[in-house]
Image (cartoon, rainbow, N blue to C red; front, side, top):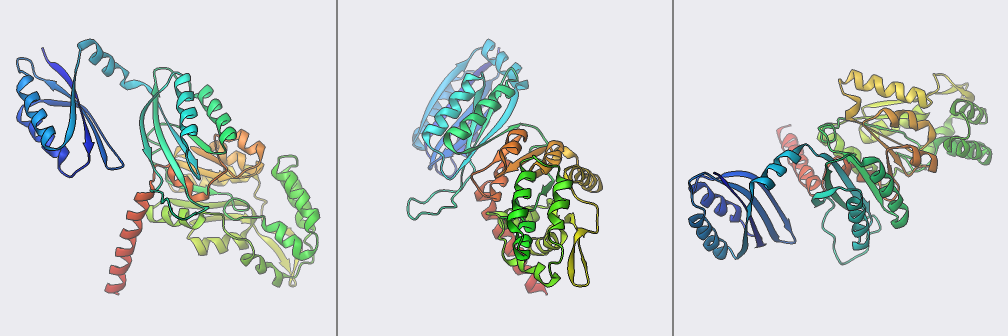
Length: 420
């Protein structure tokens, strides 16, 4: 009868350690049933579950492993696994699995303690923890530092609804973001990011800036705020706001291009998505002139917004296109996905207003970004404390991955320039 042994090794991390252990196991013709390795602050933790074939003795292998571990300056522990425990382990491979991402300027022990306790209280187990953000320096004070920890959890029953609610309550307690996703093939294979523009991709509302130039800023801002809170129908509120712009000289319009900054992390996010081959789209209730500007500046694939009507050098107070409201955004998102042969499960949609909810609801991942309370409550995911580049963590991209991507892109660019 086969024997099952769990081998745990720990100690300072050095090159060649795993190879040395594997070579010894290979000499005894054992089968590796499970393996996991992690390095935290240059300290190795390696676990290997092996099967000793029937009729074979474990003692000679154990002695060699002890000697090798000593030479590698590692601690080693052997745990026999009985048949009942092994069979249970095999049967639980179909458990419900989820990914929890904790995001903030810092992640503290108190936050991790509450999150891990909440997971346990809901009957789930933490299988893996990984830091996705870069290593933090203890010198200097960068207000835009990101901290991100990803947890993979599992349970024999699906308690995702109560767990999600409990985690969302913690975000208010600690002023952090916690994303909760079901582990699936689609989570690791997103292909399209669709953005609202105003107050999402940029830090403001274009129509509000145009209204200030016209001298009707306060009137328009009040209508805008009510619409974003979901208190007014978007088409009606948009028609009322744009009517107030009538008579604005056309040569004033482009002034706003330089007055509204990009959202924190927008350039880093879009440039990374472009390098990784993702499709990107702006689906906006704002205006095409600003959307086209961002398309050229950032390299966006698709832009759909409202075309501001200008006649005889002045704004007429109307648009000369179908108004892009919430329903239209969702329809456009479906059209783009179909054109690119992308499943909606592979789509990430990001917005801040009530008119973004239709597209957030049909996307595989809908994210309320620095959004109004109604939108945060209604969306599956909410990010309120970090910049747009933190979205990369939600698709599993680590900061160290970005360094490698940047270096690779720089090498390719240099080679291309040399050839030309």
